[in-house]
Image 1: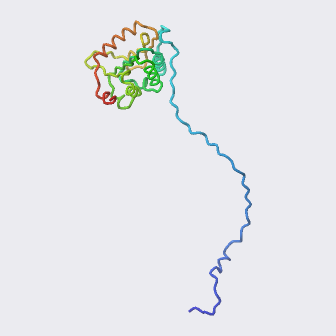
Image 2: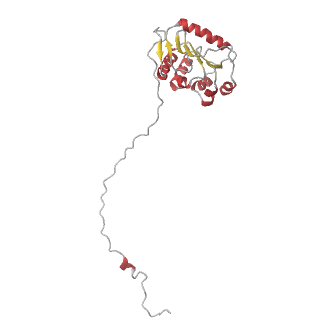
Image 3: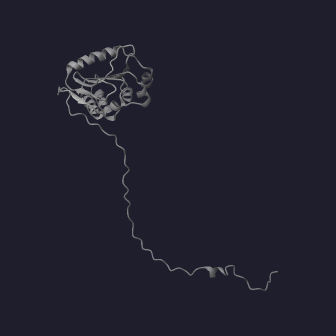
Length: 217
């Protein structure tokens, strides 16, 4: 029973006794504003290849190579210096050698320099290049009248080699497909003429590949 005459009870009675004494104020002095200098994000830059230091039509000495880097340098030097004609005889467009921005740039400049300039590619198996993509396939879609890619005729006797011909005197040759090693020539019209005749004969009987045709349409 509630006694109406009892003094009112404060709901906070007993709570205040349990609270700690008020803490002294803490004085805070701002050190001032400052700027955080975060390092700029690191952006991966494509590694640019450098051409070999030889002049097309100059040195007649044979230049041997045994590493991919040296082969790439010789190929780029020939591609950059060609003035009229480029021919590539390859098993599969050799990604390690030709699938690079520097190669694409050199071929683009060559093809745009003169409407009569022509790059022809003969390959044995285009499946990996079509499946994985290749810079020269992309370029052939942009400039189909100047850059043509054909497949070697399987019934035609094809050489088990890979080479690049630049104009009438430049050559990069890999005589064994299973090896990187080969050589480059910058002024050998005789050997280039022999290989050019073989290339033209193989080109005349080459065939259109369905994968390439569907890709390039």
